[in-house]
Length: 272
Image 1 (spheres, helix red, strand yellow):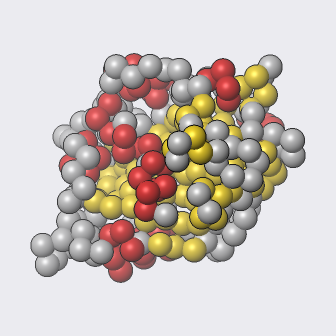
Image 2 (cartoon, helix red, strand yellow):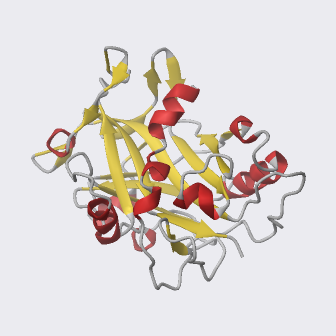
């Protein structure tokens, strides 16, 4: 599991290529340690992020997610990697700014929230005109074991617990075009755009009272997606390694192809 998760954490792989955004949201550029956000992600405002005992403090968060996609059924499905079962998972990266801007693994860690199953095309995705999107079903299984000795595990679990509680909505989406901020960040880092398509998140942090994810809440600008070869059941391994899909493999004739997809953003978000 740890090997797979280290492959899937694309959000931190691009941590140094964000840029400062002047917005009224919680967006903080992943490449600017002097930036700070104006508001707090929903569900996190009850926490004092000062950690003791030499542990890193939880000052900020970034989000990525991963799921198998079956084009035949147009649905998110469970997957398997080298015999390990993988349900759709949201990854919450927590820590100090240096974890996001410099990749310093002593300053942060990842908490995995694994969903109860997959999902079919959701109304928000149809209304937004994107290739695919679904509402991630709870209840979630939380794994914060990787945070031991790095941050306060109880605090990390509490933050993720609020963000995955009953009634807190998560929508994941994939679109053909990269968001504007994501494209700037990727090209600014000198990375080839082939292998990236667009994606994003929507959910209760925009409208805590919503009963369903709305198209108006889908935010694609900072989002990007990587794909991995997937046969509809298993991640395909070549010489023991998962094979990355290129852009032309992920979208054919305007339709999303079967693959294992990782959705991330170039932003991290600071807690007040």
